[in-house]
Length: 374
Image (cartoon, rainbow, N blue to C red; front, side, top):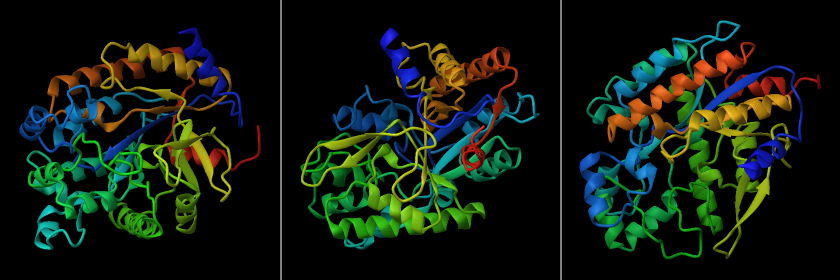
């Protein structure tokens, strides 16, 4: 525990200090399907192509109307000293595979559908986007761009064309995120969207980023100011693509995972909030977590409060990572409801311990980092 506290202090030392108690919630993976339903999850658990120790396999799925409504009900109950609700920066995956069109092409072409169309196909999700828009209008949610797809579609299509039996079986159930060791010299992670090992793969990923940013702006009627790379995997070339397309701020964890050519390893690079990239973008790194689905043995409220307190001690904004899977109930309603109670408890204690706290989105936070030092 002492070592963990030292780490939490260390990551807050470098960078600009802001003498306000600013708190940001960031939540990834919104819009993506991940595990389609309980029946498919249980089928692939039996086949040993999913693991019941993987919380994303067990809990993460497309947002239902109930999921969004329950989350908004909690966020809407509380306000900071400025009258603002806790606001979650919801990082969206704007497209999912269009299985029928890919099948019709005999795996020769990749096709996708907007996540808003995916909602319409899922029971209990037909009005989800309307509720998300209400959350945006009430300033409880603030959408940003995560990726076009939360998967390496280049690698996935290659596996399908090679008739990989496990991925073909998953495909036949409109499913891709099986836990299977991929035979490649890369990192064996199908969820790492921006991992690539050839110029041709990079060009396809580049086109998907530009297309995804276009879709985001079409759907949300404004461009995304920031982005976060799936699985924290990206390199300088990916940064340049985002910079060229107007994205000046990069969300992330404290370590960037940089793909190493012809290697099964990543090169890790430490970042801190306010740090500049070679391209001129500004990094914003999470310095706290609220992830109760990842390990039920941990007291995530206390863990998160400690991280917030340390950030504030160093006059740094508290940027809390809290993935979507914590608040999705279609695969496990009890897990969702338990986590929502924990979230409400966390918000109550934040307001009690730091009545001067200000809830802001990531996009609002970026504006403070282009101002002069305080």
